[in-house]
Length: 90
Image (cartoon, rainbow, N blue to C red; front, side):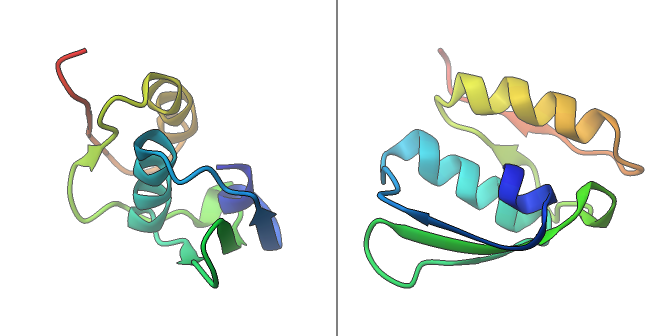
């Protein structure tokens, strides 16, 4: 998420490919951030700055990622567009 609102490229090595982390990547990509997966366990994104995020094309499904849900609420509250977050039953 920090990489999405940064300026420039962020590279993460040792990325945990669990469902919570993957839900976060999908949400970031839905906001217009170019997310690349060059190899297993690696993520690279080109930040758009907080003001450069775009309106998601659909609902952001955070699955069971409660922390991501809460952090995205704060990030998206300051944006100039509406967005909707959903999660699983838990």
